[in-house]
Length: 143
Figure 1: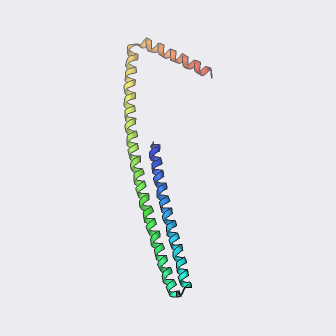
Figure 2 (figure 1 turned 60 degrees about the vertical axis):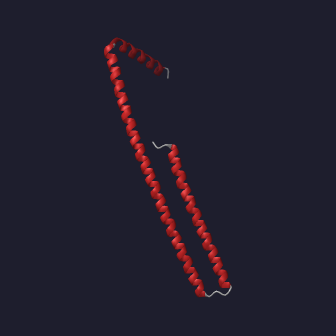
Figure 3 (figure 1 turned 90 degrees about the horizontal axis):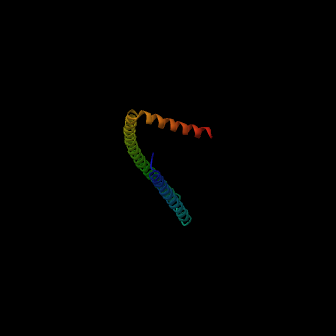
């Protein structure tokens, strides 16, 4: 299982990247809006239709370039987080495998020890088993 802190860190990083992209888009849109207002003002103050078209084409090109840059940045960030998540999953899987192997070895040792104890003292083992069975029966019958 993934460490909740690591998952939270990854979520916070993704949220921060999204907030940064959102802020950059807002700034770009604000700049475009201001440029359009400025262009409109210039037209009112003696700008020709041709100059307006050139300025509009320039703004469109700037907006398209900004969009491409944001898309490239989002792709790169997505790849980075995907790689980090994959590496963390691989690490956790290997750790889980190691823990499972250790638990299996420990269980096997305990089984051998109990088995040897029962062989050495069969009467005592039978008495303990009967006592445990009796207690379990009492607990179950009271429910």
